[in-house]
Length: 387
Ligand code: GLU
Image (cartoon, rainbow, N blue to C red; front, side, top):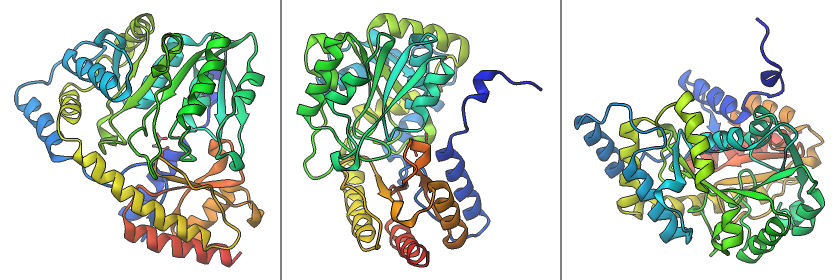
């Protein structure tokens, strides 16, 4: 069967593939320490599960509006107003099948062939592939570990051409954990406005911050940048709801309408009773979010100390998300070879940096239990020192 050129241009998602391999090995009884997918190990908070169960019992099992349950769109709009100071109304919101799907639908609705999309590297691996699937051109701008892997306004300016349509901002970042300061966000916003670009702000890790780091939504700075901002978020990371597949996107109404047409012909609504769980996530206690953040903070500390004790490995101290992006260049190995050998010899699953545009690094997720972290880091040390 001959598949389209579109599919041929895009590799499979390595994060999903390695996470699936690690899960499979575990099921087979292999003692794997998985630092692969960014998937919190906590159960979804009980009140969220109860709300979804109640919705099932009440018969919320039918089709709903393609753009999402009206009550959920309202709850998201008020969350964005109160938490993020973004003046969105329910009509500015679309509920999607996870944060990933919100970005994919947005690219399909916005990107024409030849449109360029600026993506700072290291990047979350799906951004460039989504641009390509939509027919556009990803423009990758490499950033440096010395600058905590953040794009500077000068670099952003230099990457702009007459074809540039969109800039992808992800703070806190996957895979580096970098958090842009409010001043850095403001400086990038100026470039976006001056050059009349659009910016998509992927804020999926906004609640997972450390050491007093602050999250500023770029759209909150002033009306000029707000009009050019698309905000993406979801429930997976903050509320440990990865498998629920509920995300959302907030944007000017015309984009939401365009995405709703695409959604109407592709997925229809997101699972109806799952959306009722999401309403409870926003309206209920936010304490579980903070409890999980505190646990991540402890794990980050342990993992950072373990990395710094391994000769030859290094990484900047991240202020957000739940990843360490570790430089392995002193080993002289390509990241995929390193990760494969580490998994085969020590049963530690990690993601090769090549997937994120940085072959000199590997990504470690610490969204896993402390025992696995302690055991897995000892094995990583054994592996590196044996090279
Ligand atoms: N976003 C998470 C990660 O980077 C989950 C896997 C994926 O969607 O890529 O590990």
